[in-house]
Structure formats: C-alpha cells, structure tokens
Image (cartoon, rainbow, N blue to C red; front, side):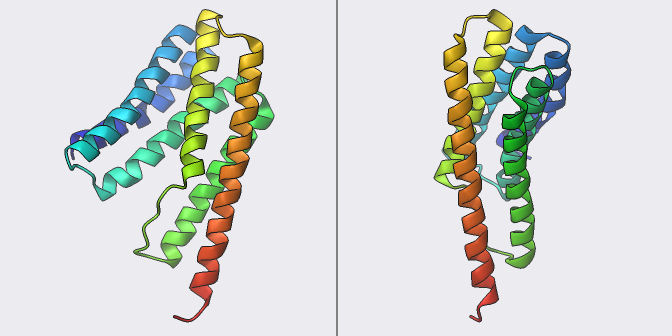
Length: 181
C-alpha cells in the first residue's frame, strides 16, 4: 500500500467520525475534520500524480472515500436542518445511480476504464464547498444566508447535470454492449 492509498483510507475513516460531531453539535470539530479530509483529497491526488504512485486500488479508494465523506456530511447536515432534505436526497440519489451504473458497467464491460466526467468534478467541488461553508457557518456563524442559499442551488444544479450526464453515458455504454462488434 502506498501513501496516497493510505490517505484515501484515512479520509474514508473520517466519514463515520464526522457524523456524531455534526449531530452532537460539535460543529467546530466537525468543520476541521471536514477541512482536513478535503485537503487530504487534494494531497493524495497530488502525491499519486507527482510521484507516479497511481494505482488501480487508488482509483477505487479515492472516489469511494469522497462519496463516503460527502454522503456522511450531507446526511448528518440534513438530519439537523443544516441542509434541505430535498438536496440531501438528490445528492444521495445521484451517487446511487453512479455506483449502480459503475457496478453494472464493470460487470458488463470488463476492462473499460471509467473516467469521471468534468461535470462530476465540478459537482464534487460544489458539494465540498457547500458542506464546508455550512459547517463553517454552524461553527462560526459568519456566512450570510443568501450565500448559502446560492450554493445550495448551484450544488443542486450541478448534481442534476452530473446525474443526467452519467445516465446518458450509461445509455451509450448499454447501446454499445448490445451491438455486435
């Protein structure tokens, strides 16, 4: 196991640690755990690319850790009213579609690489920024409500766009698998 993979595992482990901090009103600690986990995402990618430490395992661990952390943060923030329930449902539904599609595609088309879509990267950034801002506001009460509302709608828009783009991709993959080669 290399350093980037260990960092991804640590980020994955941060997800269950984050939930009780949010739910038990330990928002300052939750904010810093989330920020550290977010920085670890940038660090593992940088280290993997810079030091030629990209692995198949890392290609799986990184997005799983991202989804676990963001999913945990969104569900916990939704449970305390920090995020609207409809947005939490939208984010979780998108992730379910992506994971189910990935599982289907891996089962149906072994050996084809799965690369994230650019809109998915934009969506991940939007989700991270929103969660960090909401946690920061819960911890320090410094973010104006209109900014949070704008981030909520921007995150919703990128979530819908990303989910739709993955559905289109899955449809294309399905069509290519059905036609004779």
